[in-house]
Image (cartoon, rainbow, N blue to C red):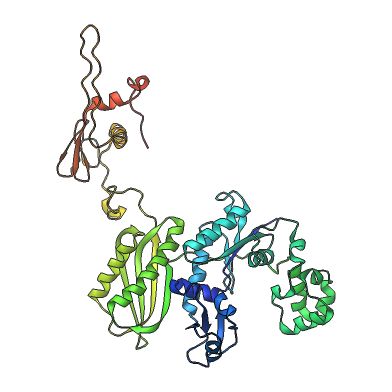
Length: 452
């Protein structure tokens, strides 16, 4: 039997606004459908609802009820970015994903069985990863999309197989959001719980209430109208924001870009990859669009580096008029695992540092013994001398100590067993005796194994 996981954010418009502006978190916030005092309120945070603000009030009415209310226009661009962030969270754990129109994300729980120990662990991992991208989400696992969604809304992580009817029975009918006419009819029939609705025959309900009524009965039983429909995923990671006021200076624009870059890097980091290229689209005050591409030398997740590249691009070609909308697209790519140094950033991309294959004694040749010695050298401090072996009773002198002597020199690579090995401009001289002494006694007479 398939198992479906649901990841959603209650009050998505409020959560998206707080994600775009973290200073709004915890404050009495209300979102309006437009500007002006007569614009209706379309969403209200918990602190605003506690003050008496309700959806449907005008801005003037809401401000009269709560004087400290923060009113912002609804930003659908930020909501779309939040939904895409939820999709990225689901993609990091599963491959079959479907995003619903209301922002909920469904995924095949069986596809994440090799990454998490249990279904409860999957729900916990989804919530934790959503918090990394700035969203307070809920997750649940059930036998169908309907059961998983209702479980997530009621903070139940797992609905075990075979217990769906028992879980759904006490829930109120409003959980399914029936049309007003059908809800009024069911209220006259005395149907107030999903358990009461699930006991009605589907054919009789369809005769009296039509297909919408039959769909409600099946949903009350935990049945879906269709199976999970996976969507095609991939492409650049986009973060966008509609500015409340037009910006005509560089520093305020960079302040806005910092938040976009941080959110994009958090989404890219879910899969352990980096940003290889940036795309910046600016919506200008004269209704035109300024698009530009910012190439990078190597994939990275360093926010400071990305902001420096964006600053250089904007200083070289500043926008001709004020900016009203900003869209940042980050093209993901795998970060190179090897680093040039412990405290140095990654170097140029792999295509630029690749050398043609060569034989022994030429640049680029690395034999098995050199690799083995390099592996031994990485386990030692920069300067270390092995203690000399004690002399025997007959006066036979023990083996000479193997010392590592380091000196500054140009970064070069030569073949041969006794030649220097370049490591970021620091040349280390080694001897064959060192590798022999550092090996276990049982392996001293054996050649070093070939490393992959």
